Amino acid sequence: MSDIVLELKNVNRVFGQGDTKVQALDNVTFSVKRGEFLLIVGSSGSGKSTLLNMIGLLDKPSSGQVFIDGTNTTKLSDNKISAFRNSKLGFIFQFSNLLADLTVLENVMLPRNIQRTDQNAQKQAIELLRSVGLENQMHKRANKVSGGQAQRAAIARGLINHPAIVLADEPTGNLDSVTAETVIQLMKSMAKKLNQTFVIVTHDRHQFGEVDRIITIKDGRAFEGEDVPPKMELTV
Amino acid sequence: MDYRVQLAKRMLSNKKGSLIGAVLAVSIGILVIHVNFVIFQGLYDAIVRDLSSYRFGDVLVTDEESFITKSDIFLVNWFERIPYVEAATPRVQSSAAINVTKNGKLIEEFRVPVIGVDPFRDPRVSTAHETVTDGQYVFSRNSVVVGSRVVSDLGNIKVGDSLQIKITDRRGEDQIRRFIVTGIVTSPGGQGLDSEIIMHIDSLRDMLDRDGETGEILVKLNDPDKASDVKNYFLRTFPNDEFKAETIEESAEAALSGFRSGIAMINMIGYFGMMSSAFAVVTIQMMLVSSKTREVGVMRAIGAKRKDILIIFIVQGMMIGALGAGLGTAMGLGYTFYAKETKMTFAGSIPLEVSYDWEKVIQTALMAFSLAVIASIYPSYKATKLQPVEAMRYV
Ligand SMILES: Nc1ncnc2c1ncn2[C@@H]1O[C@H](COP(=O)(O)OP(=O)(O)O)[C@@H](O)[C@H]1O
Ligand SMILES: [Mg+2]
Image (cartoon, rainbow over all chains, first blue to last red; front, side):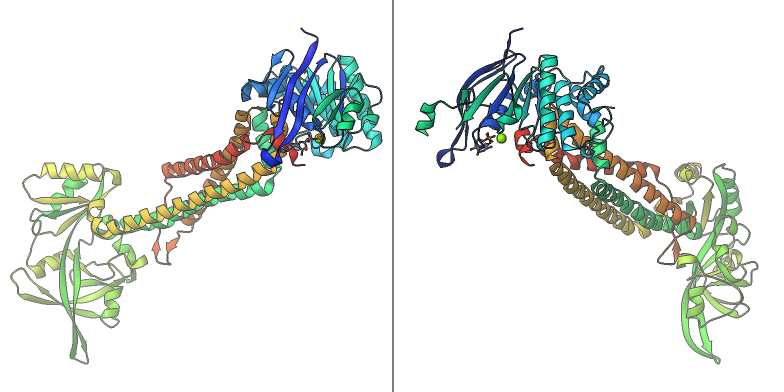
């Protein structure tokens, strides 16, 4: 198995045409190693979510390629992409991650049930819920738990299929700073414990403290590190 | 349980309002069809029942041209030897003129149909004797029973009055005789012999100068489904007598053909009602789908295929259909049971002949179920078209 879990090659994403044309991603190229805890930062509207949607196969690049775990995903059919998302990716969104009609436990089991290979699904889900500290909440309906608990359940759900990458778009954007801190620590400790790759989008870099790597997005372009090169600043 | 079925069930049970609305729409569609059936098929069957029991029996035998000359006792005995036959009875029909006089002065002459019955055999075939509301049924040669409508036409005659009846015999000569009124008949819904005068069959034969002749033989069966068999057996046994034999469906045809197209019309209206229930299901399912936009987005993101989303909402449609069909059928059968137990009447007169048509009950339930599922196809398809990114943009 290669050490590279994610590779973007010249990814462009253009919304609209003519006057309303927006270049949301501009020739983005980078790769991510297994086990990396990667932060994607940038101001609002810079293209972070668009980039994460590319990696999450929720949207297709206008041009360029996305390789996940060595597979070029650009040409996959809708069904293949669904299966790919299910087995290779875990998702944590900002809001209402969980299905309100199910219990916390059922939500965590859902990716496994969708896969229809539900051996041990319940056992593993309970184990994960224990490790995110939700063992006492798991039979509650998902809309009856707090925002922080919902995010922790989403982390457990994101991990249950042992994905190549866990993706999170502003996972703490909806939480108070204390709760945000515990959720961030949880992601970090899970990443370390499981050697799990995380790609996390945030506009608040400081909440996260020490991380393996940072990519900054500005006007759709990706830069290694926390700072945009001065040359770039000048041209803006 | 499959997670899609589980989700469908939870989504529905967490949206009680929509669920109840959709289930009621389906079940009311079914109820309307049941009510229509009870009333209109019940009325139709009541008319057939009354025509059979008052006038035609299950099988009616006449002569192709004139009167039956074969012995009525012979024919009745012949029929009664068949195991399916409960009883048979001869009748003669004619028409009479009755003078209405006041203070000895002739006011009016009425023409009234007359039926001659065998006082001993007729009650075993026809329920006409049960419609006597005053006095008793025909029992002797000089007594008559008068229908209630004739009574009021003649100016309120009473039991015990005498009535002068004029009948033209086979040679064209008027025969006049006096009879004692021994009874008055009024049938529920006026379907019986309310417009007739009923007398002893031999008195009428006498006046017509047709001794030993018979107008018709009414045959009552203990199994009405065997009417055609009995009729055909009879016609085969007497090929040279120019008999005419008809089952009740045939003899009642003239009275019922218009009614049947009316029923077809009413059924059409019922099915249109069902169609509008289906449109209600479409609307409610569209609402359910759009309220689950975000959930669908999350499911798609974590790997649910289009097909899975389709299945979730189609299964919802099946649940709505099954609950609606169950409830509607229960309500319909409840109404049918009520109508039967309370001996419901049509417009307060004819007692409806209420029956359970299980084939139709099942057919209606299946149709309602299928319509609910079909109605879910478009909303479910719409749900599969939701793109995960789009779906999650709505917060
Ligand atoms: N579906 C879309 N249609 C049109 N423009 C879009 C769409 N999605 C994003 N954009 C545009 O692309 C740019 C980047 O958006 P986004 O990736 O959401 O930014 P961020 O997540 O960094 O705040 C913005 O200018 C936004 O308006
Ligand atoms: Mg964003």
